[in-house]
Length: 397
Image 1 (cartoon, rainbow, N blue to C red):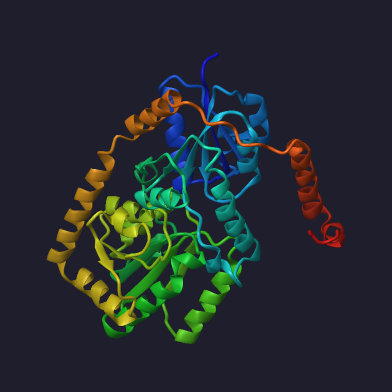
Image 2 (image 1 turned 45 degrees about the horizontal axis):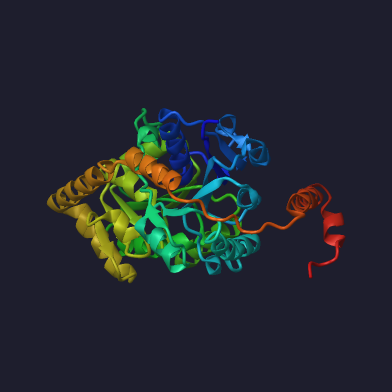
């Protein structure tokens, strides 16, 4: 029987870093002759045709196969992968510390807490643990994973290569300075700090400027509401939440941007920074978690979040064309180094390493695991379709 190398993850998103990496891995594996499918709990409707349901993974499982398990949060797909006999390579995309979501998203607080706790269980389950950045690999090592490595994020830019759609973005093509940030509207990305710095820039340096915030906010409506209240309390104008956009629209916003400003406090990699490099937008980013490694000596890193200090940096970059040119030259060089990484060769070398290593004993799995999985599915159905009955159930011990 030929060895198959399948991937499993909770969600395959459209246009996000994990989704792009999953599709890239599948392309490499199939190109190398391996049978390779993607098993998920959920997928963006635009990508569903590329996936299979995670519950079908049991039928595709075999002790000689390899599961590439993308771990970004605890999930039912993860627990099924744990129980199967296949060899496992875990790819860790980092889990945001749950404290960022307190009073914002109660369910996500629980999921992140449980996900971080669940991750530790895979020390005895996986044969190889890979971070998609050195920062993530170090976290795995600190948790006690014995065999670790880095499967680098080498983002493709095909989604930014098509013609730009200016249907919405065209209104901002008017000679004003456009400060841009791209990222999901979630608390760890510290949108309030971006807004503070922009307010100082607009007030003290350039009133003809605006802030464009591009990214989905679904599930984080409470945080978005708090940000709107914060904007009203500050009295700052010309802050625009653009929301989720198509690839063609995203291209337009990058083309319009004069500077990319990131204040995020927790990133496993931060692909939008690299997208900004690719689009020739000078990047200013707060030096936290994986961001300095992602910048790789390029762009402008700052460690002082004082709004006036950041505003002065924005002004220096926008006003000094020679400085802009030097920053973009450095970003181009960093991008060349990133794209020169042999993603295909690195991935296939890890596969060879896995196949050449004696497999670890499979940790014990409860005798009623599959029955418990079925009961969990039924409970989820009650929660979704009969919420009053779900609330009437006795509390968990």
